[in-house]
Image 1 (spheres, rainbow, N blue to C red):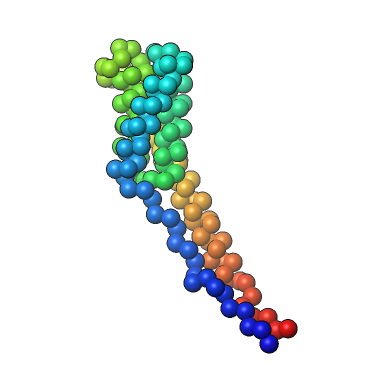
Image 2 (cartoon, rainbow, N blue to C red):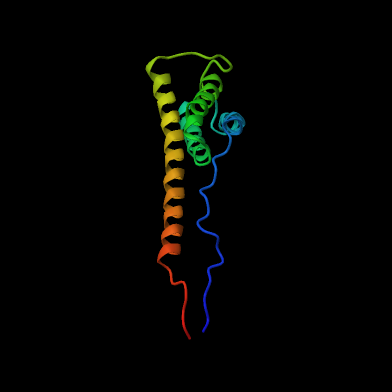
Length: 141
């Protein structure tokens, strides 16, 4: 008789999110590079492509971050958007509804990325646990 024994020690843990200061550093560096690249390719004073690119950056950073990192990520991306993607470059301004909308878009993007990551990790962990519970443990030959 052959007795099959599982080699795994149980379900693997869900990956830990990246530390918030590292996410914010990546947001600062990534936003700087994106805005500089877009200013060189598309030209300055074109905030729509910059907002789209920074929103995508916020989603990507949210995939590896905690929920508490979302406000800082959005704020850092907005600072580079407001300071360098609209005229006058290097000057922070507040244009009421426009900047509130931009902050809202960036914050929502960071939250969507984080929520998506949590759902995917939870789904994968659930599948690993249910596969271990329902699988055969021994077979007779």
